[in-house]
Image (tube, rainbow, N blue to C red; front, side, top):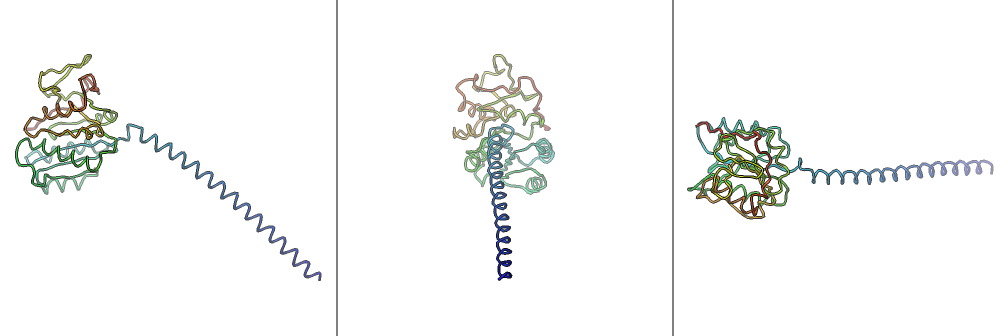
Length: 259
């Protein structure tokens, strides 16, 4: 009888220990769940901050290119300017893809998309036609993402400083292109040429991607780059007063045709 009682007591003590361990585990699980909820809340706040932070808006750099003696040198210069810019997509376009450009892009560390015309571009301003292909691609793949579109030709030299200044463009933003014929002065904004309506150099303008793609405007393939840009701007603003001047005299872009 004594042995049975002793065994029962040991069983009760063991049960009490297991109960204590179970209670402790439940407390630890509750604390872990509480911390997880807190982490989820913090992560949500951080993600909201990232989404609203202009520094995280994607820059879509659209660059037509074609075969010529300076092509590799110009691609290299632009790639170096883009090399350390976060949240960037470089859309490079050719009438027909070439090995030189395929190999060059494959050796960069940039996020890029290489497109060709699919045989659709045969005449007119082929660069404008290629830019339209890029805009069509963005409409299909990036229409709902907040960002900025910049048409970066290879005959311009870009300072990497520019790309941090243009992420908060709401409609259209402009800055000077040094050595370009299209210039402007500020306070009030005044262009040095009378036509087209908005005589802005291709290297001097950036567009909010969401706003631009909603207009469905495209480049006219039978006009100059500047006339094409003017039409895009005209689709986004009712007057020059709505154009944001990123800089009036800053030197961030230079028109530097080698030939």
